Image (cartoon, rainbow, N blue to C red; front, side):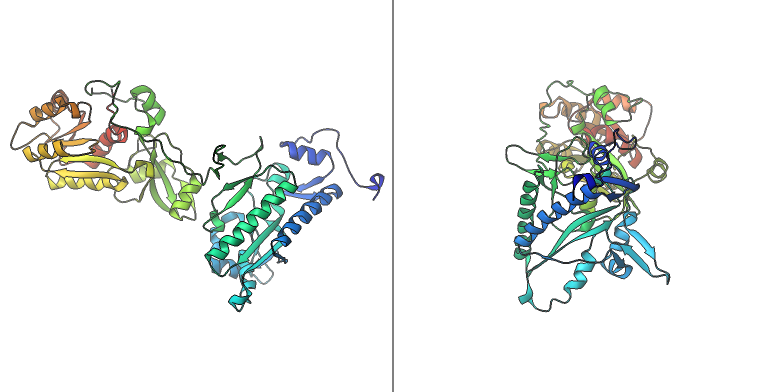
Length: 480
């Protein structure tokens, strides 16, 4: 084909609706033309590039022993319903009915179809098998954008292996991974292999190849020293240890305080010297329709894909403020899991290991305290009140907070609390006084004796919630 005869409709100016640099260049150079949102025609130059890329991929796939096949784009709904992914795929799966009313799907992936073909493998002697195809895929993207980067119709090379055992699967996986590395090298694309979440596709391991780009939408973490790379949805790291024994720079004793206008982690950190790593952030989500509390360290952000992977939920969404208020009696910014017993609670590993010592043997108080705190990973140790409770306190290890009944039968609780506060080991440890009733002066008397705060008994879960959000979520650091 002579250049003068080729159809290359170039454009002088950037199209107004093209944002990404690749989108603008492909349009201006005459490689593609848009039919509608997410659907493009490949013009002669675009098709030539596509065929060259397919050729390179085909050579590398054939080199590892994979066999090329071709499967239909339209699939009967029964196969997807049998696998359970008819609903799991959600709105991104194109669905339609034929003239007889039968349900069909336009394939966004072909696991159901390839598994049907594999039923004809009759003996282990036929394994392993690796089959691949180049096929048009359809995905009902809610926001097609950036030209060919996010479309509703695209060409995909998908490959599938059938192996005799897990070791064989690992061998096939490595063969494909190495083939992809060679493919990107031949294409001069600087792609980084990164661990990834398998998502709705399922599977125990997944590697995706990320090409760094200023217009990219994914984030990965990459260690230049060891080469570890992972999508932010999959990445895991070792948390820096928080040494709560270091209390330098704090007041010698707690002081009463109010928190007007405090609604966020940052507000509490800035106004009351309560760093985020010593706060508990409570988020409320619906997981497959069930309202669930999700607890994180205050300075951490939730990654929804990690929540999906950890729980196996198919559909998640944040609860609306009205839904939260109806369920918990409070609005975002004033939430906590203490006292919540009728909704599931999920706590991040970073919160594991909190400890509380309860000096009180009133069953109503102990039940209210332990049942609400242990739900999110807080270890509660009960000690009887009176002298035996004080002895238990002096021998306890790793105590982060004390709940202490000041109405002791054997001794003056306020005097005892004051003596405990004078001990160096407990000088800055939060002590919550449990008093008999909310009488005028009770708070002042408890604070004067050395308490950080107080609750009344029988212990009310809402009151306990408010108190614990101020103290336990900050672990050993008193406010002041």
